[in-house]
Length: 359
Image 1: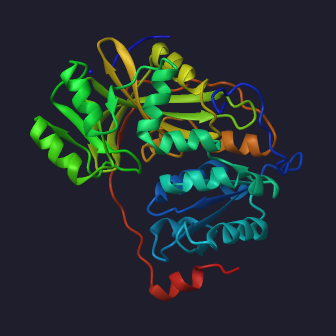
Image 2 (image 1 turned 90 degrees about the vertical axis):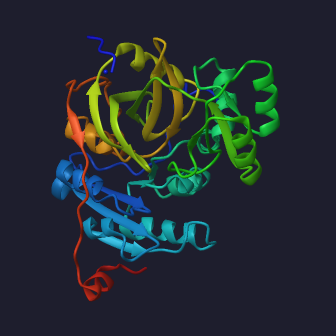
């Protein structure tokens, strides 16, 4: 493959098939539930484009004015994800709408789906979320760092507290400038470069939830990956270089291929247990790839992969039908550019209220 560098639960081996509701032979219709859809309108439109009338989209959100609800066949307003009635309500929606697969589009809900996997699988629902220990590692960046180091995966040197950083700094193991970011959560709020020990001590005293990393100055990349829910192996990888980013992710990217990156992705995923789509962030520095973090859901820039022909929608449909997907890693063109922009949904309030389904 042409190489173009851009300008346990510990083992995934074995099979973890749930009972699943098998789509009848000759029938490829799929009912999918998107939880916490928010503004992810284009993702739902891509699903519709792939499967057309063979797809039913059900969406939930805590807000009745979440714009992506307008692109669902059925939409439900639900409580906040940590409310005691939340999971029972989601299970009832799965029963009522005969859901085949469920996913979430926000990070805090990933663990929730992982923890209730058995309850969903008992209804024949494929859970497009990682297994519980893997979900916990993805949400806690410091625990993930320790896990990666233990398993000899290249990643940025990370310290979980000021005392740990101070020891590493005095030992010459890390130097300024450094990068701080929240240990848990999503998005990039609070993430920034720090140039002096005095400022670092000040910000860490103010926020004990921050971690400190060596500042990576290499190229910023990511990859959309689909892990087959039957084989639990990566079957599709789409890699791209970030040209521009805003709070929350990349908004301009360009595709590239490198077998070395694909091999690195396989190595990382061999020690974790994922199920479905995920977004992986990397740095390319000193001739090597370094893993930054993993978001085990559809990334905001998956739209690029889909536009370049890497269709996770059909991979999901094959899996919920009980069919294992063939590997198609790198099946796309290089130098395809994505340029993201904003749009709007305009509706009368009475129409929004009337469109909400009720249990």
